Each structure stands twice: as structure tokens, then as C-alpha cells.
Image (cartoon, rainbow, N blue to C red; front, top):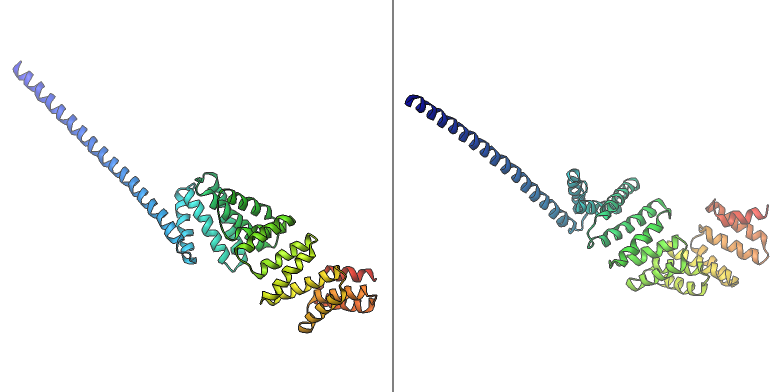
Length: 321
């Protein structure tokens, strides 16, 4: 019996020892696994923080190279985290900046489409302190999309998002000008004039003055428009803009029946450059009003030689057929 008892005790101790070894091995394996798991998590967090930090660092460089790096880093983050709002916003911002710098219109439009897509995605879960900037950049993206395509299809969205940005407290010097141009494209003359006037308080320039003049003409306030056109002529060194300002001044003179002043304005323009279609058209209108249809048709023909699709001259010539 004693021997049997001794063997049982031996086997019991041996089994217990094996169990302890197995438990130890399993525990060690679990520790190793958890260690690797947590190391990976921590490493991912650190790398992610480094990536987010580098987004801000490169953005703050305000250079094309910096924007290109932001574009690349944010794209890499989104490959593994498709709904990372910071990366979405920065990809939208950098896409816009690269679109603005791109000389190839097709590539520029591709960047703008990417900017709009990512900004709209980021907008869904954006923090309250960043939503105003997203709205501002969306408004600008739609504005430049219109500008590139020479349409006004997105002018309403420019107005929508820029006004949202304003309501949320966002401030940028270019907002009044962008709103003025977009309201003008939508035919909202009074709002356009108001926005342009606000833009003048920020920085006066000849293009802004000219656009304000055009809106006052649309609003049948020619006398006010003339004041702005005179300021354009007095300050601008842009030859193309100066021609447009003189043409508009002469057209206002015609509408006010100041035919002599209008004729002098057109003739002065043509003495410097005989290839101004609108000036020839305007002279034709003056000659028509003075009863000289032969000279009028001669000027309209000259106009059409310079600009075959000139709507006014085409209409006038068709009346004589």
C-alpha cells in the first residue's frame, strides 16, 4: 500500500507540474501577444499623431511643395482611415491650393472636384471650430470651378457656403469680392453692389471698380456708374480694362443722348487701336441715330470683321436686309 500511495503521489505531482508548465506557457504567450498588440496600437497612434502633426507643419509653409506634401500625407492617412476628418479636410484644402496653382485646366478641374468631394465629406462630422473654414473653402472651390468652366452653374453654392462661413464667424478679405461676383452672375444686382462696396473697404482696385460700375448700369443707375468708370480710367494701367471702361462710358452717353460726347469717346479709342469691335458698333449706333444709315452699316461691317458673332451688329445688319 505504501508503495502504491507513493506512486500515486509521484504521478499527482508530475501532473501538477505539467499543468503549471502549461499555465505558465499560456500566460507567457498571452503576455507576448498582448504586448505585441499594445505596441502596435501605440505605434499606430504615435505614427498617426506624427502624420497629423506633419499635415499642420507642411500646411503652415504656405508653399506649393508644402501643399503637395499635405496632399500626399492626407491621402495616405485616408487609405487606412477613410473617415479621418482631419485628413479629409486637409486633402480638400490642399487639392484646392494645387488646383489654383495648376496651369493645365483639366488637371486643375480634377483637383477642384477632389477638393469639393473631400470637403463635403469632412463637413458631415466636422468639429464646430473647423466647420466655418470648411464652408469657406467649399465656397472658394465652387467659385473657381465656375471660373475655369466659364459658367455660373455653381454661383448659388458659392453664395450659400460663403454666407454660412460668415454666419459662423469666419473672416477673410476676399469673401466680399467673391460674393459680389457670384451675386452678379446670379443677376442679384443689389446684393452684388452691396458686396462689392464692402470689398472696396478692404482694398480698392480697378477691376473691382469696373465690376461695381457694371452692376450700377444693370440697376439703371448710370450716373453712379460713370463715377466708378472715371475712377477706373484715372487709376488703371490695364489697357484692356481701360478700353472696356471707355466703351461703357460712351454707351452711357448714348443712352443719355449725349451723342457728340459718345462719338468723341469712340473715335479717341479707335485712333489708338482700330481693332475694337464695340467701338465700331457704338459709332454705327450713333450714325444711325443721326440718320446716316450708310455710315452706320459701314461701322457695323467693320465690327463684324473683328467679331463675327457680335450680337448687336448682327441684329442691326439683319434689320437692313
